[in-house]
Image 1 (cartoon, rainbow, N blue to C red):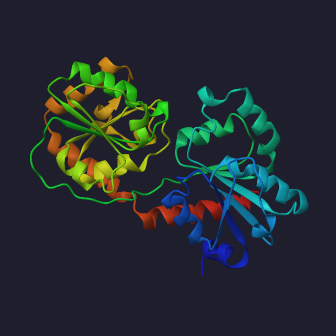
Image 2: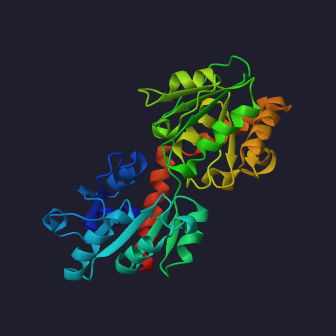
Image 3: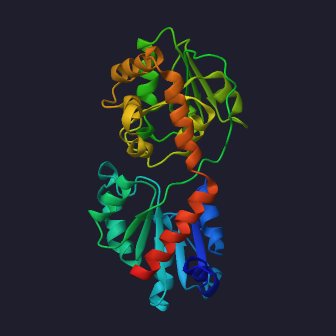
Length: 318
């Protein structure tokens, strides 16, 4: 039996996730279950928490630093307990590190012994603030669809929530330069969009994404910072050509011709120019195949295997 599996057998692990309404992420939950973790919900940073729910834990796996206050409280009484935190958000992005967040980290970061980052950028950012080990594990695509081949059209898809760094506002602005294209916006981003342009369709929350993967040919994600969004993997797997910014975690994996799909500038006009360039470029069929192949590698099985290896190694490094 491998050492990776031995950790799950001999250690009591508790997976703590914040009561955010969108947690836990399916990939993080699968990771936690792969090491036999008990799943426990906590308040969002502050609030009453019954520590008996994690009593007897040797390792606390946190989905977010929102869970750190409760991990610190438990670790004070159980100093031998080790704490690993998944970072899949803007926690260490410089533009989000305001005074209150810095004070919060000053109080609670000391209780974390190691990190799982979902991109190299996050791993490097963590190293700027703490001297603890951090390893990279990519999440897997959750929804797997194959788009029926129907030619390459002028319909663009975006899927995401309402946080500004996702870049949907600039994508909407780009549509002023693309009157002959259509944009479909799916997810909670609808809360922040007030566009009345005829070529911008604000769909909001939808029960299934398949119809949008079927009708669109381009997936645009011009984020300032988005660690490794599953929607990018899913769009690539479905056969859409992605147009993503350097702030999107998958851009780290775009090599060779795939670099042609990465935005160097993130303003509306540059986004529009790149979308039109992608639509008009030759060799799209080969690029689509490369994107589908790349997304296909990030399976649930691979992601869990990578997580168990990284989790085991982190515990050895502590």
